[in-house]
Length: 399
Ligand code: PMP
Ligand code: GLU
Image 1 (cartoon, rainbow, N blue to C red):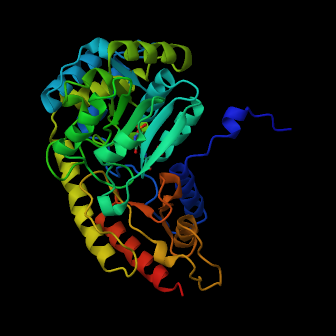
Image 2: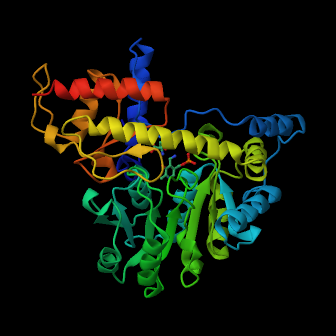
Image 3: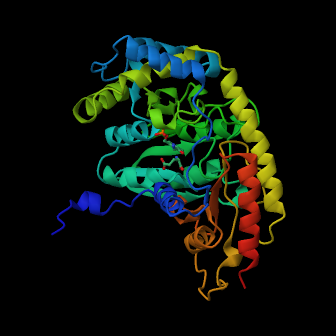
C-alpha cells in the first residue's frame, strides 16, 4: 500500500520536467520530436570551464566540500556581484548549493512559517508554488497578464501585502514570459516594499545573462530594502551548465547561516568538481556568455517573427530576456483535432502538439496562466524553423 507522506502526496510533479520526459519517451520510440518544453541552453559548457573540472579531478578535489561552498568560489561570486551588479557582499553572505532550484527552496524553507503568505506574481516558474507548499506557507497569486507585459505593478503589490506577508518571489528576466523589470519598475516596487519592513524579497536572477535590453538590474540595488533581499543565481543558464548543478544565494548573513544549517543536514556541500568549474566560469573570460546571449537574441527575433505568422497564437510583446515565449492560445479551446478530440485547455493543446505535431511545449496552467502555452527557444535555428512549421500546420488542422 502507498503510504507516502501527506506532504509529498500534495506536491505536484514538475510540469516542465514531465513534458520533457514525455518527449524523451517518444524519441526513444523513434519519433522525431523537437523539444521546446524544458528550459536549458543547447550549448556545450565552454572549454575553459570543462578544463577546470578536469584539473580539479586530477588535483584530487574528491573530498567533502565545505557546506556553504569553497572560499575561492564564494569570493569569486562576491567579485562578480561587485563588478557586474555594483553590489557589496561578504563571502559569509554567499551560500553555494546544488542549483538555483535548491537555493530557492532553501530560502523558502528558512523563511516561511506555517500560514505565512508568499506573494507570487503570475505567470510564475512552476516550482515556486510547490516549494511554498512544502514550507506550509500560503501562496498569494497576483495576476500580471499579457496586457501589462506580464509585470506586477506597485499598486498590485501594495494591495497584496497583508500583516501575514513574509516573502515576495520576483523573477526577472522571467521564466516563463521573458519579461524583464526595468530599473524604474524595480524602484517603484522597492518603494512599496520599503513601507513594509517585515516582507522579504527573493529575487530569482538565474536568467541575468540572457537579457536583450541591456544591463541586468537587481532589486537588491535599493539600499532601503537590500537587507531583506535574497538574490538567487547560478551557472546553469548563463554558462550552459544545467547538468553540473550549482546555484547560490547572496543574502543577509542570518539567512545565509540558516541555509547553511539546512544544507548541513540535508545535502552537504555542492559537488567539489562542479564548484571548481563554477569558479573558472566566474573568474575566466566572459566572452562565451555574450556569444550565447547573442545566439539567444537571434533566436528570439526569429521565433517572434514566426509566431506572428501563426493565426490565433497571440503575443503582443517581444520578450526582453530568458529563452521562452509564452503566447496566448485560448482561441484554440473548444476546437476539434482531426481525430475528433476536443482541445479544452492549454495542456490539451500541448499534448496535441506533442503527439500529432511532434513538438513538445508546456501548457500555461502550471505557470499560473491557463490561457497561454510556453515554448523554449533554447535550440538551434534549424530546429526552431522546423518546430514552428510543425506547430503552424498542427494548429491549422484544428477545426
Ligand atoms: N529559477 C528559474 C526561474 C528557473 O527557470 C530555473 C530552471 N532551471 C531555476 C530557478 C533552477 O535552476 P537550476 O538549474 O540552477 O537549479
Ligand atoms: N527551469 C527549467 C524550465 O523551466 C528547467 C526545468 C525545471 O527545473 O523545472 O524548464
